[in-house]
Figure 1 (cartoon, one colour):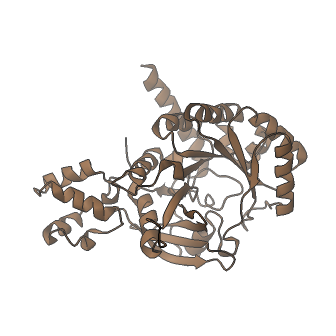
Figure 2 (figure 1 turned 90 degrees about the vertical axis):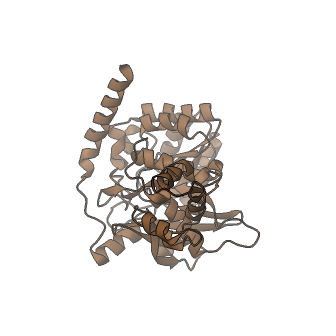
Figure 3 (figure 1 turned 45 degrees about the vertical axis):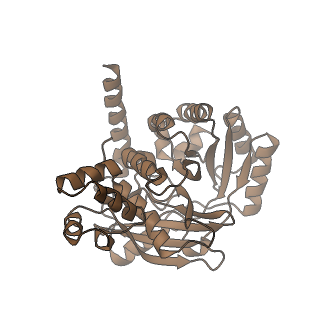
Length: 380
């Protein structure tokens, strides 16, 4: 596993044992440090650790994500948060409360380079990947900010990796996050309570089958055919639906878990009855569910969503053709709930967090080159 950075918050017990050994400290200190990391504590807060060791740990990059702004919805219990990373970059998350617990939507990259036509996250490209420790800190910062309800062990019971960024474009750090998030000595969250959303990086989906078979895979599909998907999602020029749909079926068949297809309904583009029929035919035979989303319009984009009434009509068309479908509940619409909206406004206001040397147009050459090298290695 090649990580972008091995910060303190990303480390496992074995890695911490290596650190304390190098520092000539007793082995049991590693377990103490790990227990503190699991609740998001920085070295200065690790009160049962000797001061000299805390000072040494302060010399290691931590990987924190600190909540600097919160917006509370007046319509529901949703909270939108901005996190600041150690280098000043800004990412966002959304805490959504349900009867069964609370779901936290986290970001995996500062920005995104996938270029989807309806998304605010990708407007300024990708600044950089988040480390596993920064993703974990998105969760622990919420735990510290919002104490859990009586009778619950945690505030965050479910995690969806659906915020800014493409998780499978940050594969190794995402995998390390999942390992630490589900570990009994980490966050201890069941992998079945974690969902990951991808726009469709096909080779990484096949890798993910072996690496994280219990995580719920969500695929941002948003179209019934290549022509429409080409308009909405540039990644479709690299991985056609004829490759993506079999990858999704393979995931469902081999893991025994239902794949979720996300489908943002765009007025006049992909929301007709004909589109519903074509989508149903394409998904037939796959253990799947379609999550319909009336598009949350972004001011920088020219696309508009359908009404919720039409979304339910579209769901009905799919159900008649024996495709399971629901309309996503609206949350946080009054607090810039859509991915990237609040971050972009904050960045514009403060002139930070949007500089990138990675134009979206370069991604497809890079992905193609990466896959070619991987194929060469596998053929040896």
